[in-house]
Length: 405
Image (cartoon, rainbow, N blue to C red; front, side, top):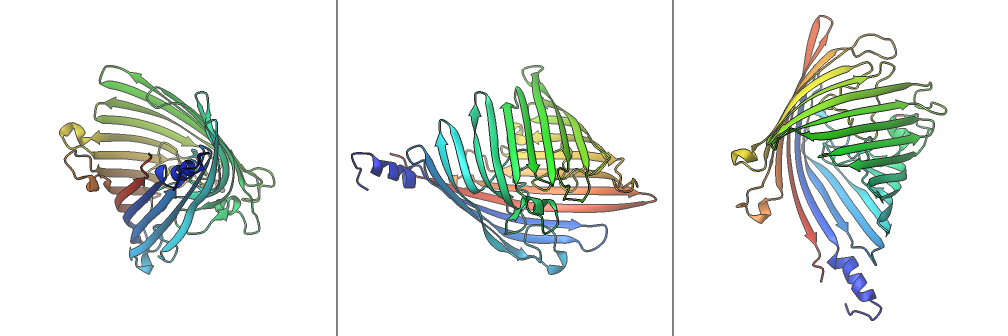
């Protein structure tokens, strides 16, 4: 393309090619959950996403789009419910992201379908396809603080191809429709001191406020201690259309990590308010005791957790990481009746391998393999039931970036 004297040709070249990016992400996911009573949940799906993003036209305007798909490779209709596929074990395609952005003085406004990762509103990317959102949002930095402020009109849950309004996603009656006002601020980094806070408001449905902190203290040259705390409060608002009556609850927790080279040990305690189970319609539960199968956020529930992370790079196995944890929860109740619920214990094991060897060919380095296993024991009066869950996940991503001149 010839370059005009006013620089339009060069700007278009950078917009459409030199600064443009493309991604092809392939994912294969097998999940097998054995429940206390049939049916069980099992499926093997394949798919991923293709994304395109332009460069910044005159450092001001950008376009982006991502198409997602998940398709059944093995999916018996009798084991539906894995959320790898649409209900009925059907595959689908969806335009999960399609947006335009404007940038000025480091602040970016993005409109329409996009990913949002703002604490309680997040992608929850633990199946084939993440949550995505229709939103109109401003992001940026104000001095040392990162912020997000915007209006979220609809959400596409990870297991379906369509978008619904935020009231419907929370479980409101079919004739109720509402969007969400969302804001968050973040300061600092995890290796020193980090503070985060967010609040969302869905009129007549739900208000939620999340806050946490992390501080890291070096003990020796090779040992450090990290302490953190979180507190969140949530309740109905306005006409209380979610349940037809007002409700409110809270959750709080503390965490301590001891980090010694390739080894991290941690301990956690969390408590949920007894008035209501904490609601998580817009992303994964981000309480410290979030596990593979259980969230440990039932009304009144207390939970303790210990865990281990081991990085095998120190053993000349770069890219291999093991994580294991045990979580014990009790005191959960049925908020409506006050009746006690089961005492749940969950034991999780996670092995991740991301090709990191310097000798590996370049085409192999984007490969990541992950195996996960969860074992849940549920103790009720004079009985014990169990859940077992296995997951095998493959991710492989190819990226292209235009060669800027």
